[in-house]
Structure formats: C-alpha cells, structure tokens
Length: 112
Image 1: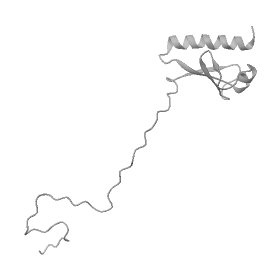
Image 2 (image 1 turned 180 degrees about the vertical axis):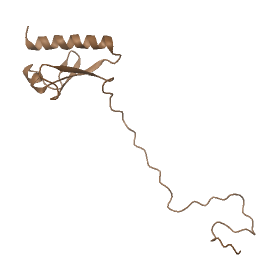
Image 3 (image 1 turned 180 degrees about the horizontal axis):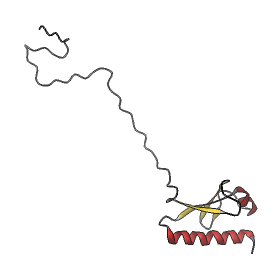
C-alpha cells in the first residue's frame, strides 16, 4: 500500500472516530507542508471530503482534523454607525413655559 493510500485511510478512520465523539463534523485536515508535498497533494485539495491545509506547527507524520467545535468560524460583523453626543447641550423643557418665568436660553441670575 502506498504512503498516500495509508494516509488517506488514516484520515478516513480519524474522521469516522471524530464523528462518533463530537457533534461537529470535521471540515479541514491539517498536515505539515513537507507531508503534503511528500504525498504529492496540494494545499486546498479535498481529502476524504476534508479541505487540506498546511500547518508547519504539526510534526511530520501527523495530521489534525479541525471542526467548528475546535475553531468556530468567524462571524460576520455588521458595521454600525456610531452615535456621538451633540456638540451643544440639549435644551429640554420641564414643562410649559409661563410668561413671567425665565427660559433656558437666558443666563441664570440669582437676583432676578
């Protein structure tokens, strides 16, 4: 059996085992770039229904299955407008103005 066939079989068995123990199915298999080259595969290939990605942090001869439970997908963030404070203070009446009372437009004078 070729090295490529052995790796394919190992990935298939790992995928089956993962599916038995995790509610999130794997979507990616990561391997060291040297292993991908040795198998004559290319990053982005589909191996046993999984996207192939290189990961130099993994040792040669190893692979890792990735599912949404391990690395949740990035959520799209909706861009929102920022609400800023008004440049001038707001004038809020506390009730109907009477003719003999001052308004908020007039400066406060304690003697009046």
